[in-house]
Image 1: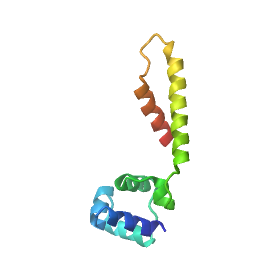
Image 2: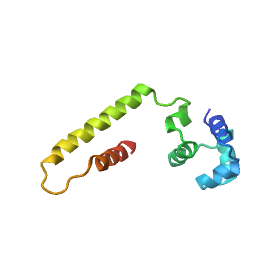
Image 3: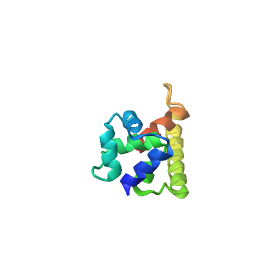
Image 4: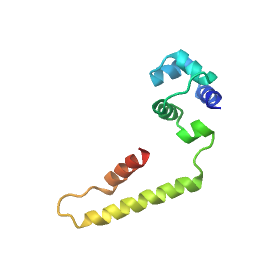
Length: 112
């Protein structure tokens, strides 16, 4: 199902195989092979495709996006971690990270 999903998403974005290939820095024939199911994209390429299509890798792989409850749980966990780190940093004498810097840091850690 991955191949047809890639083809459908590409068409939905109004891209040709060559245009998608250019954005992903791969050959147009590779895009065709992925769409036909003759080759499987690497994990890095799946992430790049998800970014081009502005979707999650979950949706790309399974056809199902994160449920809203999962997204809410991730947001609560991130907020809890940022708040906890913020409290620990309040007592420091050197300049602590801002809330925004902490949020970016933890979001990057969660994506790995």
